Image (cartoon, rainbow, N blue to C red; front, top):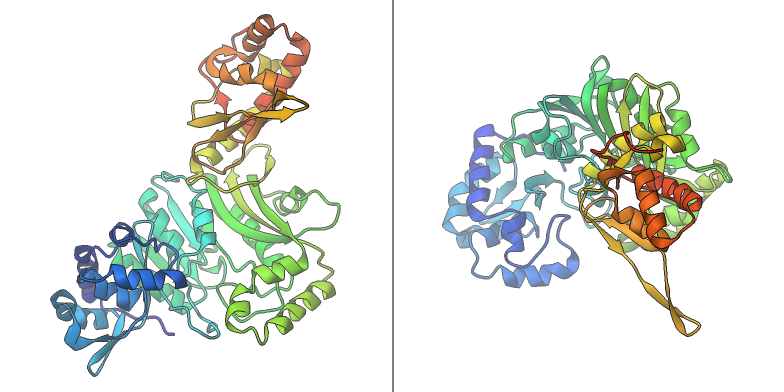
Length: 496
């Protein structure tokens, strides 16, 4: 479906209509449905009934969320008066006594996002999708105040999701895409959300910004490793992981000193090779530090299944052949496993580090502050990783967190199991704490050095001070490495 080329005045009028009608995440949630990633099939019956008597919101939802055709004779006054503007904005078509939508309008993160409808059959080559779990996962990594005063780049913008989401935290955004339909949607979405600081540029990968640098770069590229090449938004032009490699290296090359880049990537995981090695190799000589967040490693069949769910649901007749084609491709390319990860880069002119974290649970919302703490922790460890340095330092855990402790019943008695520290918000990765280190963790408030804490706990519990000291150092390294702790106000003035 060709994206609309809207009239700006009509787009402003449509924006006013949507705001007045409560067509928003909160407005639709108020009638009982969460729609940030679109309407699920089971929700349709519920939503249709919840809309009774809620006009003009009901008509707008039927048109732009459910994709229904609506009789012009049954339009509420506000929508009837805005029909010409809705058509001029490219959002619907008047067909005799019926109006039918051309796009979907999905409320998402306080924004309204126009995108292609999801057809019952095959997606067309230039299909522009709406909000996705992948985009959400990437944005969770970006702090709300990511780069104040800096210019940002959204490479491969699609309908403009990431550009819209980061716009408030930067001076302006350049949004690029090879798909002209995507760029028209991005411009439309900027207008629907009253945003004037997004510049769209056509071109492949980083070509439209070849000589430029940015303080913030986000990229959700077509990284899928497969035998397919038709869908611009998903399929890379390469048969292996060259797309992810090139994106990572290009982000590094376009970052200003101190700038951050965020991307989702895949890579071919070689048997027996540490999973961080591939990204580390890609980044060699780029001048960037990296936090790599491993979502998982799939075998070829699991990977093929994950990326062909839509085919399984809508075209079960050809699904077996699709799986065979993907598996043949992986076999021909000697691909035994594929890793999926989020990558955070920070450019700086100092010796660089690489830090890998395996994500073992579900995220707990915004992880940007935790990512910043991880980066600060790695910087500190790079300069002060010696045991004596750590013992002389005071640390603090002032980010909201919980300490979980359990008792296990074994052999007729309760046994204290290792505790776990978890942040209230963030990546959802716990840090294990041995029972006799809990008192050490509870004292990390910045008021005394680690050596002072160890001495105090050893005296109070009778623990061996040498063993307690060594294990406390490892605990602090883990807390710094996962963004739970920071060097605190007590500084480096205590006893060694």
